[in-house]
Amino acid sequence: MTPKIKLPENSVEIARISKALSHPVRVYILQKLSKMNSCCYSGDLIEEVPIARSTLSEHLKELKYAGLIQGEINPPYIKYCINRENWETARQLLLSFLNESYSKEINCETNEVTLQKQ
Image 1: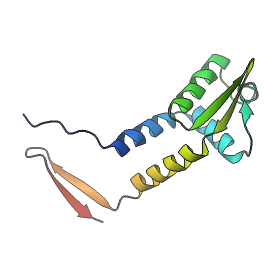
Image 2: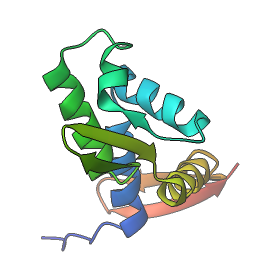
Image 3: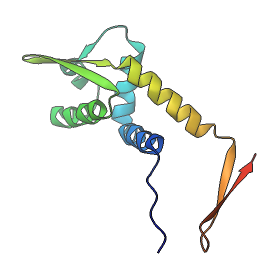
Image 4: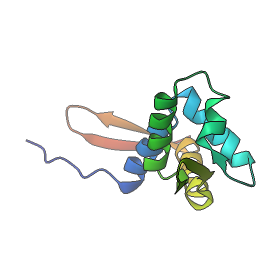
């Protein structure tokens, strides 16, 4: 049996970011926050998106888990901002991933990988 490889860290990061981007409401929130020079309260967001408050909370939690936003709790309000440093890192990772200039051909019988320049 062939030993399993350890996945590269950037593959794990790209998957984590992609999961955060996998719902249109989360994409909308990121677009809104990335264009703002200030933060936004979750109460303001709930008036804009066609979802329940609890669903919005789950989407914000997913974005926060991915490190793309940060929240500041000031009871009873929660203020959210884009995490500029992580946002830039995510942008660079995704650009690099989407702009790879080679394709891989994998022989499933031998597990040999051949890189082909495009």
